[in-house]
Length: 393
Image (tube, rainbow, N blue to C red; front, side, top):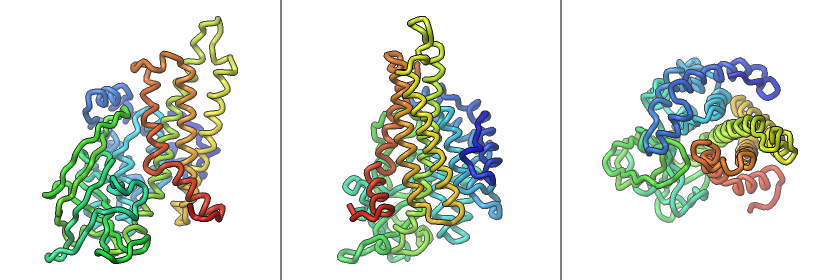
C-alpha cells in the first residue's frame, strides 16, 4: 500500500510504519472488506482476519525485542490499526489484545508476562477489556464489581460489565474491580485492582447485545457470580488498579484514533473515486465546490489529527506522560473521521444508503467512536482541566 508517511511519522519510526503498511496486502487478501461485511451481515465472526494478522506477525509488534517481540511500541500498534482500517477491515480484537497486555507488560510479574503477553504473539491468547458498568458508565470510580479475598488466598469476583467487545472470542478479560471493603475509601490511588480473568471459569455468563455497527465482532454484558480466581490473577499492586489501568487507557485512545482515521480515509477515498466519475451534468461532480470543499476539508482535518496521533504515540514510547496528546488524538481523530464519512455520504447522495455501495455502512462505527471508549465531552473536560487549568467539571 503506497503511503507518504514522511510528514507525519518521526524519522526513526518511518521504516517500521512503512513495513507495517506493506504487510496489509496479505491480510487484505485473506479477509477483504466484502468478506468482513458478509460475516457481519450473517452475524458471524471473521476468523480469516485474526489468522492473517497472526500469520503476518503483526501481534509481535509492541512487544519488546528483548522478550522476543518485534518492538515498535505504541507507534507500531497504531500503524497496524491505521493500515487495516484504511482498507476497511479494522480489527477490534487486535486493539483490545494489544492495549490490554500493556498493563501486564508494565506491572506484571515475569510469570504473568510469560503466560499472558508472550502468548499473544502467536494468537494463542486474546483479551477483551472489562471496565464499563451499567450504572457507572465513564465514571469508573462508581464501579460496583468487587474482588474480595477468599480463604484460599485468591479472590472472589462478583459484578457486571457491559459493552464488552469481543468477549465471546476472547479467552481472558483484563478486569477492573473494587478491592476496597464497605466504607473504605475508593479513589484513583486506592480501592481498585486489575485482574486477568479466565473467561472459562465457572460463574461467568455472557449475554450478547444487539448492536448493529457492520463489523463481525460483537458486544456483550458479562456477569461474574462469585468467580474464584487465584492470587496470581492480580496484576501489580492491590489498591492501585486504577492507576495501572490508566497505562492501558492512554494507549487505547491513540489506537482508537488510528481506527477512526483509517476508516475516515477509506470513506474519503470512496467519495473521491465517485466524485471523479459521477457526471450527471456533463462533468464530474468533484469539479463543483459544493462537493469538492467538504472532501478537501476532511482530508486536511484528518491529516492534522494524524500528526497529533503519531506525536502522542512517540511521547508514549519515549516514556513521557502522553495523557494530553492521547486524549487530543482520540478527540480529533474521531471528529475528523466522522466529517469524512458525512462528506462521503453527501457526495454519494441517495446511493450512499444502498448497502452494497458500502458508504452508510461506515457511519455507525464512526459514530460509536464519538462515544466510546470515552465520549468526546469527557475528553474536553480532561483537556480543560489539565491543559487550561479550568475548574474541574
